[in-house]
Length: 69
Image (cartoon, rainbow, N blue to C red):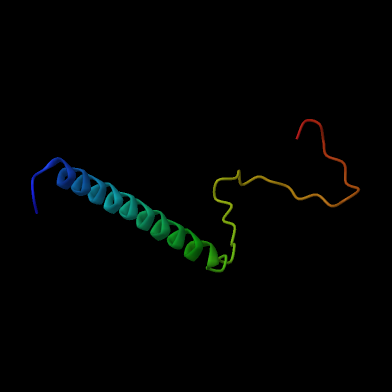
């Protein structure tokens, strides 16, 4: 290919177009990964209460809590 001004302009435009296409492909890959992650079912939740104090009391509706408890 020649080294004239027109050839340089075409070469720069081709590089710009390829860079734009590469960025678009990266966005599509990211969106695909996100959609794939959201498509997975939510795992079952099993709470582990290790971080709570051991001396908890349970209350039923209608029970009154002691103010000093």
